Image 1 (cartoon, helix red, strand yellow):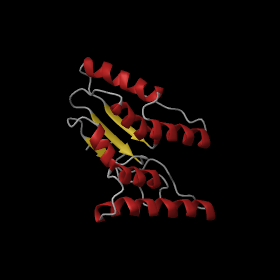
Image 2 (tube, helix red, strand yellow):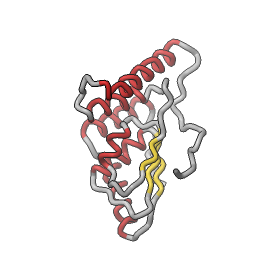
Image 3 (tube, rainbow, N blue to C red):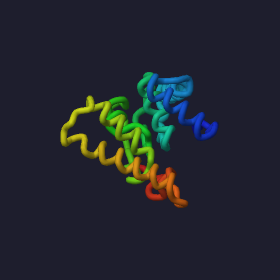
Image 4 (cartoon, helix red, strand yellow):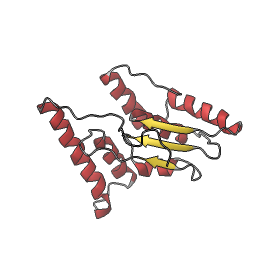
Length: 163
């Protein structure tokens, strides 16, 4: 298990922003080194990444992580889009990217990352990204103005199953 402990909401947001804007950090390169050692030994891995963990896995792949045959990556509620994962992961690694709940605020950076990946075109193909951003913004508003916060949590469905 590779675990990045929380330092609190604000420090975690700052850490994520640094990773998102500047690319791989020490924790990302550390995961890449471990994945490379496992790949060299021929050990397949099943990665389950939630939220910021998705960003760490993406950056590890961008830092040159190798994956042994039969490895898989499962991503839940990631701040980065499926398109970025498909671009960064080796084509031999299956990606199980779980859709994020509509009102989850993580949809804001996820939608923005998809728009950035596509070059911010004003095309119908970006409607899903724009809709996700709207859902995330509505979720933030709901969190701010109600007693029933939007849950940004690992979904109960299929959390521990392979595709």
